[in-house]
Length: 408
Ligand SMILES: NC(=O)c1ccc[n+]([C@@H]2O[C@H](COP(=O)([O-])OP(=O)(O)OC[C@H]3O[C@@H](n4cnc5c(N)ncnc54)[C@H](O)[C@@H]3O)[C@@H](O)[C@H]2O)c1
Image (cartoon, protein in one colour):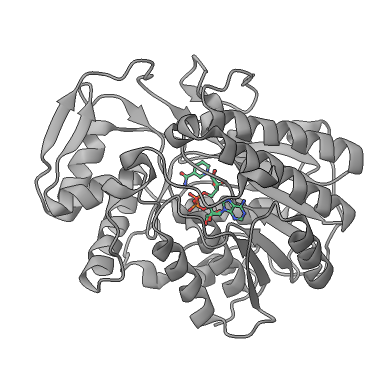
């Protein structure tokens, strides 16, 4: 299926759920109220000052290199780009941070929908493999890079910091080096809300100084943001860093709370509630993140950092109540003391993304949990999914790594 370029108003395919919500949108719906495709491409318009600079969207065809395209967010972005008519080149090392069958299934879904290698090309390898990556840039000549590959997870990074330095810092540097060399038009990469980890505030803005990361993972993302500025400065590479706030949804990562809670409550396995349940976090549904990522790809800002979140928090208690409602099961809850250092409320200030990208989250937390629980039930009923979250990265701590550290 080929859709018109939606000028970055993406949403998940209807097959993800049976949503009837007003807040849902599909690529075809979105194209109707979006800017129509035209032939302006790299004609950038600057209004005064960095934070008020707007860039008109590039709406022509693109070939996009999506790193980490077998993963949760990367595979959704690839799916959207392909559906609107762009060609996609994926590189993923398929590491076993969580069950590799989930990543294989993500790729299979894309392969089945796009059998033509001109539309979708998949490479299996490490982004730090210099020869392989140089060859990919030579052969494919992508002019747009969406860099989602990384080692994710805060706690596992404390146990095994070296793979985070390898994949996140070395890998990102290597990609920016190649992107500068091959004149990439826009380089968009995944940073993380974890960079705010040492912050005392609860409403996180990009203007905040985040020089005190509290985990190797957060430090690796902050390091990428710093290096990104350097590559912009030295080579005028257009770069946007996107700080995602806990992303969830169909095909979501099994080491993260939304998946774990839905899975455990569905199976009648105990969940832990820290504190009285009043602490609150900003959770972002996958179609909103895809929308933000594609908006950033389409707008080659010179150098910007953007928060991408829902922009409002959900309390742990409300979270658990919604999971019970949409799994139709009663949760077995073990109340634990507050974790030291936990802040009561965290939320993304998304006004900059709104102003410069036109980003607005659309999916309420309840609707997102409803869709995710629905997907989970279908995936389990058809045995598409056989993961055991207790055995995934955050459940047992360290996941074994197949990255060859000696290369570093
Ligand atoms: N999911 C979230 O809530 C969240 C929040 C903040 C930031 N992020 C960031 O968003 C990006 C995507 O996250 P995700 O949730 O989809 O994670 P994911 O683990 O599902 O996807 C990452 C993919 O990158 C691949 N990868 C890792 N290192 C690689 C390497 N050296 N070479 C090639 N491939 C490699 C992995 O195999 C995996 O398929 C990551 O950069 C992550 O740090 C995610």
